[in-house]
Amino acid sequence: MENKICTKCLSKKPGDAFYLNYINYKNKTKKRCAECKVCAGERNRKWKEKNKVRIKELRLLYWKKYRFKKVLADGKVAAKRLGYKPCDITAKRLNELFIGHCECCGILEFNCKRRLSLDHNHLTGKFRGFLCNDCNQAVGNVKDSAEIALMVASYLKSKKSS
Image (tube, rainbow, N blue to C red):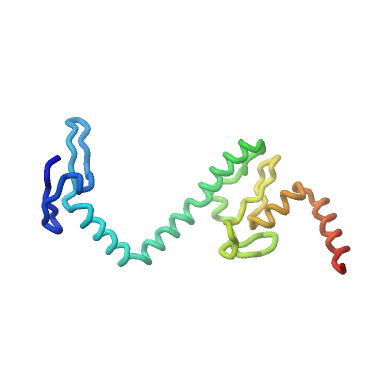
């Protein structure tokens, strides 16, 4: 591999000390960046330091835009594996309905250890709401039955004094 001179530090370095910029597959030629990996890394570090707020804003926008697409895709895989119907709602509709807190206990999402779960009926796939992990597990433990949940609540009330 031939040596190349970095346009930033002006030192002569081997070709693999420069990032690959372009590959022409017809004549199998490779073009390397003008600055070496060390100088490129330094430039990137400075840019990231200077633009911390912008990077954070862009990550937040990306997260808000695509979070439910990923959640729904993961949910479909889990539903198929566990043998129940996946949630029948679109990512766009979830974004519109998202309120930022558990619809059962009211805890805010940023106070939870995990993201809010999409609660849905496993037989019909109908979306019911957003639940924190604890409430979602409680709903699952009572097998989505309001009667069992009332019996549990009654039991807890009767044992409250003890």
